[in-house]
Image (cartoon, rainbow, N blue to C red; front, side, top):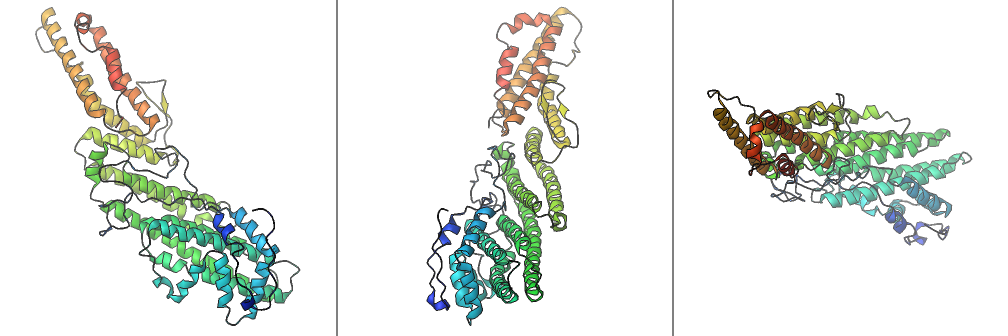
Length: 504
């Protein structure tokens, strides 16, 4: 934004003024951070409302794009849900609207006009929210959002947050200590009417019970909380009452949006719980992070960002919103859900790999581990931060998948003692061991561990366990050296096979 916009002429009537889009394009150009939560579980065209159709994933893939942070397989940082809505840029536009005399003209025209609807139409056109005025015309909550896609809904919310942010900043700019009571009353009436029209958008948003609307509700909630803090309360007696009423209306709608956050998360739980494709997806995904897990983690991340934004409002008690408790409850629910749904998998090795992948994905939400750093007893030089759940699932995967492989080298002979019997027994054990290694590697090679750190660590632990056990067995049976040299797998060959695990 360079240069100064042309001053708005001081006409005495609203009819003399026609909007020339002085600020609309500037307001539209301000990017609102926070990308749409992609519902990888629900299609906007789904007839059943369950997870039987997909919007951004095909049924044949269990790996979907995610917007989550370090929890994302892409490793990129998440967009900040309800970030500051580029408040500084919007505040700059609001100040320009005041310095150009535009807002003062709107206030004067509003207070002189009867009815004042035409003034608000001109103002809301400039703010790019002229569609908001249709809500009252169409009886509030009956204003249709049901047929709007998640992306178009988010677009409306972004335009709304920009518009409301500019309104409250312009009001704040107009409230000066040296204003007389009459001027402040005019600003108060103008602010109350314009904000009341904007808050009408809360009705249809709250009325739509749809899991994909979570980010929209969070963005609006944070914007309303910020607006509450921006609206001034001057000391002048008469105008003070109106400004207090404005803040009360913002607080009331903020509480409604807060309730909508909880009801939306309840809907999320219902939908992922009732998804009837869990067993199929676990098998097809080869232990990958499940699309439902990604979706719920996205939801949790956006709530976390909302809580972080509350820290910016010094006088707002973020604990009173209950969002921190909602995060904790949702994480606990997701862990329990994964445990229950994993029981649908008949292969215990795949089940525990699935639980390890998904639990590690949830762990990266930033939940502090309740246990000290986990040191691998098989790879003591490697250190991995694991929660107790992840530690348990890794251990169980190793035991059910590779314990039987090592057992091939550890079974004691029940044959009669003697060199020939011992050689036959050990040779047979070695053959069984090699066969078990190859069979397990072949089966698990195409299973998926998407996180590179976890994948490399799991490979290291398996290699340390299997190869060290193999080397120990060979040292205990030197008579096998000749046999190993005639085609049997060497430790180096086994290591190479193990390095190919979990590529998907």
